[in-house]
Length: 219
Ligand code: C5P
Image 1 (spheres, rainbow, N blue to C red):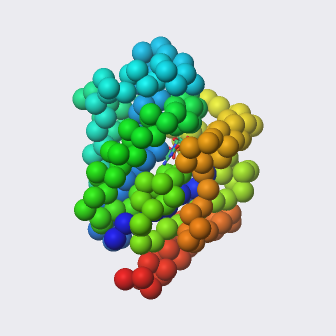
Image 2 (image 1 turned 135 degrees about the vertical axis):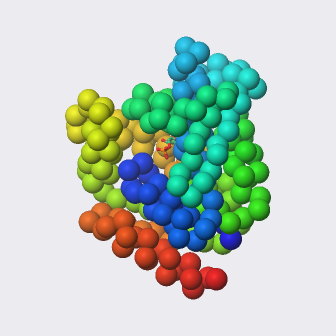
C-alpha cells in the first residue's frame, strides 16, 4: 500500500508519518528533505535558489541519496550526511524557492516514484497525493492553525538551539505557505479524495489513531 500525507509546514505531518511507518513496518519517505537538500546545494555553491536557470544547472551534478527508514531518513548530498544541515530556517526558505522550478520537481518526483515503486511506503510532503502517487490507496491532508504550526516549529528550533523569535518563525512560515500554495506547479492542496485532519489542539497519538483506524478500514 502507498499512503500519502500532505499538508503545510508545522502541521505535525512528519511526526505522524514517521510513527505511522513504524507502526505498519513501512518505509517513511520524507519528500521535503529532498527539496531541502537541493536548497542547501544551491546555497552552498552560492547561487540564488529563486533562479530557475541557475538551480537547473546544478541538478546534473547532484548526488542525492535518501536512506529511508522507519526512524526517519538520513539525507546524503554528494556522499555527505546533511541530515542536520537541511533543517535550518535559511534552508527551509531556499527549499521553498527551489521547489517552484519545474526541473527540480521533475527530477525529485522521478526519484520519489522510484523509491515508492514497491509500495509499503508512507510518503510525506506537499504533493505526494496529488502528483507523485496519484494512485495511492490512502491519502491524508494534515493541517492546523497558523499560530499553532508556528508555535510548534519555534519550539522545535529552540530545542535545537536556534536563536529565532516566534514572530519571525510565523512570518517565514506565512511566506513559505504562500510560495507553496500559489505556485503554478504542484501547489499545496488536498487531493480530492484525501481525508482532511485539522490537528489544532490534538495530540499526535490522537491523530495517529484516527489515521490507523481509517487505514484498517481499507486493508
Ligand atoms: O516538509 P518540509 O517543510 O521539509 O519541506 C520543505 C519545502 O519543500 C516546503 O516548504 C516546500 O516548498 C517543498 N516541498 C515541496 N513538495 C513536497 C515536499 C516539500 O514543494 N512534496
